[in-house]
Image 1: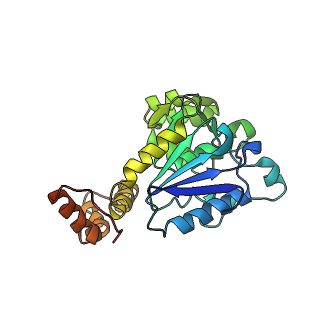
Image 2: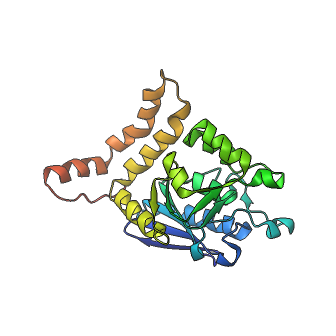
Length: 254
């Protein structure tokens, strides 16, 4: 792993840390490439079922590194977008562990995740309109799909900062923790998820993500294309056997 992106694996969970605390973990090209490289490796590893994305030094991410951007250091990757993730989130579930600022592109990184755990001191916002810009890394598209329209509009149009408590009220933040405990709670949650069958997790995420625009007439047929291989898998047999034998299942991802 690069110095800008750290990763460690344990109990089926890969913790991916943006490691630029001196810049409030602002995203530059090295971070985008580092996140993409980590995901490329871990998507293929059988010992990783769930990711946790976080930032070093008490801040999640303050967005794009504007100093780097002005020098031509772009935090975008072809086909993957900002941070190497917003246009192509991973196949496996990913949890955001947010301390401090999650602003602009940092908020958009969190929106690219499946679950958000945030400290009570965490602050979210899309301040792009205050700089004559638009939240182009998924913010203005994903936000109204996750929370009520009028709340999304207030966040996107004012550019103001919003506390984790407010975003928890509208269902965007899953868990609010005391300051400094977001990562611990996120890893605990990720380990609970990782205890489930990896093929089931990936298929479940895929159906939830892709079914948003399925018609009523096609939804079950399209779901079947995704989940039928899971029902025919060795892990499905293992799950049934483990239940009958009153033991913990041993998943193979097969």
